[in-house]
Image 1 (spheres, rainbow, N blue to C red):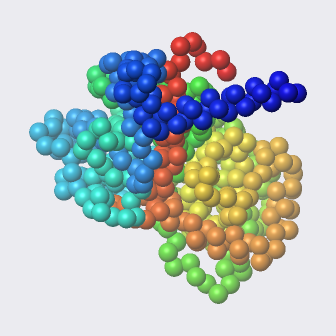
Image 2 (tube, rainbow, N blue to C red):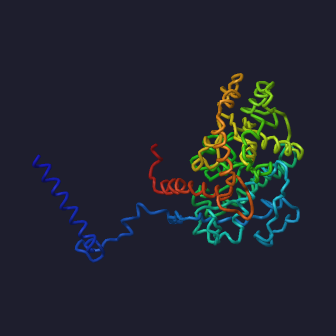
Image 3 (cartoon, rainbow, N blue to C red):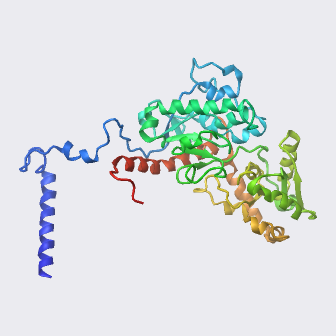
Amino acid sequence: MIGKAIGSLVMFLITVFITYSITTGGLGSSGRFGKVDLKSQLSFFSLPKNDTPLPCRTGSPLRVFMYDLPKRFNVAMMSSKFAGDDSSPLNARNLPVWPRYAGLHQQHSVEYWMMASLLYENATVDESSEAVRVSNPEVADVFYVPFFSSLSFNTHGKNMTDSDTEFDRQLQVDILKFLRKSSYWQRTSGRDHVIPMHHPNAFRFLREEVNASILIVADFGRYSKIMSNLRKDVVAPYMHVVESFLDDDPPNPFKLRTTLLFFRGRTVRKAEGKVRAKLQKLLKGYEDVHFEAGYATGEGINASTQGMRSSKFCLHPAGDTPSSNRLFDAIVSHCVPVIVSDHIELPYEAELDYTKFALFFSVQKALVPGYMVEQLRKIPEQTWVQMWKRLKEIAHHYEYQYPPKKDDAVNMLWRQVRTKVPAERLAVNRNRRLQVPDWW
């Protein structure tokens, strides 16, 4: 016991001596221990000479450097007048307007809205902006790649076998060549680069080449866990197709919405989406349940708009992938979503509790005859009204618009991107100092 006490005392005295020496300069260049080459002492922890150290940046708003890509990677797919015109950079004055009625193409237009938010000229002084564009890449938190990979698929390779598909493939080849020449891509292997990949077939030929980047996706239905996951990527809402219900303020919405459960859409789907055809058979015969096969034509969208606005609950079964645009149509229609999808991931879930305004059924339970309808009928009017009110409160988070507004869809997405930066920075910094492969 005495020996331990003496040992502890000695260690304490040594610690006090070292601390005193440091604070008084005793271990510095003029201290009693002689001149110490601090640079050589730190060489073990230093970065390779050809690496640029990443500064510590945690401030708000997020600082984004956007690559100035040739227009064939983005707006030339929207309008032929931009084809071959790379003499002037894109800005708020020459940015083309996204067509209001662009059919299903608009579902995956997140790539356009994120780019537009960075071109917005007042973003640098607008306190509502979650991200601002910076011209100096050295001060950037992340790098945005404005490649419209979803529109490229819809424009050049929609049928997967068309000869035009080669244009989609070539754009992917070319964007990778461009990025690999960037010193900022090289220093992190693209980990701090944000790449929109919202359509499930976007960037499909070479997506594995950018699997370290922060991807903006609709869900993880066609990705391996190594390729895309919640640790590094951001789930973005589809842009809704139906018009937002802006004047939804009746005295008794529960009684006014006479349809219990509404669905209109394609019933022949692949993978988990096969549940739609099964649900169609199960839900026949209910007077207050509307289940109809339909397509996203102008007439079909109008029918869906009216149907959702007159229904208490809107059914959202999985499509070819776990999610679909229907969920976000329901949200802006203030129709309580009924989600039947075992593998769905939802936007902004770090901030929003979806159980406050949506219901969830596993595929197994949803296919029990009568079970889902019975459960919906048991929900008290007061509970439904609370969920309806919550939908009205959060619907603005799902609005893509230009100019961007506080807490709208694109600002919410940039806020989610910011939460991915610390993990990316940790991975980069650890990899630089490890002397042996990671041990866990």
